[in-house]
Amino acid sequence: MPAAPLPRLRLLATGGTIAGAQTAGRGYRAAALSIEALVAAVPQLATLAQIEVEQVAKLGSQDMTEAVWRKLAARAQAALDDPAITGVVITHGTDTMEETAYFLSLVVRSEKPVVLVGAMRPATAMSADGPMNLFNAIAVATTPAAHRRGVLVVANDEIHFAREVTKTNTTQLGTFHSGQRGLAGLVNAGRPHFYAPPVRRHTAASEFAPLVAASARARTLPVAASVSEWPLPRVDIIFAHAGMDRALIEAAVAAGARGLVIAGVGDGNLGAPALAACAAAAKKGVAVVRSSRTGGGVVERNIEIDDDRLGFIAADELNPQKARVLLMLGLTRTTDPRALQELFLAY
Ligand code: GLU
Image (cartoon, rainbow, N blue to C red; front, top):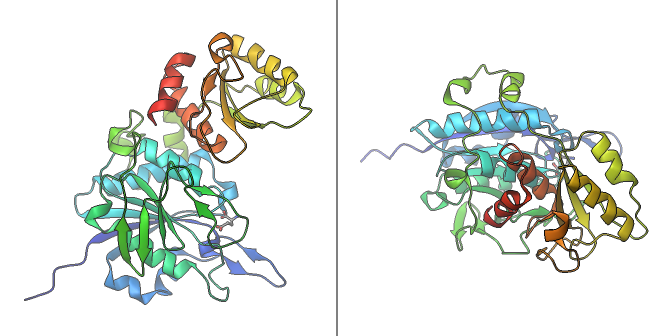
């Protein structure tokens, strides 16, 4: 009996430490290596899938932009719409991976897996984590059990949901955590084990998907062409602290922010001067979302702050950086705080 052909997988590369090379001294340069070089370094990948590579960007993810998000969404959607493609893997820096993953989970329409993967050690480092992470990511993205689980992050033998995952440590391999609702699963040397499915709306059930019309997904699409289709409104994140005044909130509004996400103290709280500035912003029609700087828990409405009276939105479980992503997309549909609140309870 001839062996069944291996699944076809599209590997989209954006750079990051997984493609990083050490420099003289203690440093390294992210995104130094091409995706072809990364794949060539792990011959075992050829046992998992027929891999088609595409270099979408070449950057450290601190330089990730909305324009690259859009291009990535378009290229991922084009791959997923191809019946011959089983899944998509995206190499990405770990710094802002959670934001890209959550954005894609809201704007890509498919039941097939999309897996983001990165590394904490550069490709040239001793005991680099990238090769096994890439192997595991491709194993997850070619597994039928990964379907309908939305966008996933694979690193350090763990599988995370885009909505739940966050980077928690500057340098250590186990940086990613899904502390609130737990892991999507584990993956041992290419053998995935999935736990419960995700709880909130995503991908095929997202009202924001697909981001770009099929006609705009041609391979030659310049980044700018997709950006001009649907510019996202400016949303700024403001980090709260003891002794905070109005200045940063007013500066954000003056800079044209249509939404503010407050990384509030504790349960999304703010001292009186900053609260008054937010109330004034909300009165002018700026969407004010209260999230928390604590890294965990739920921000509920009307606990210490009267959201109903002030016209604020509670971020529910989203951390500030993910609340910003959802608010940018939400503001393309509505500026009504009650309708925006519904989004925060649904996604
Ligand atoms: N700043 C780099 C990036 O996000 C390093 C982090 C990493 O990839 O692990 O691309």
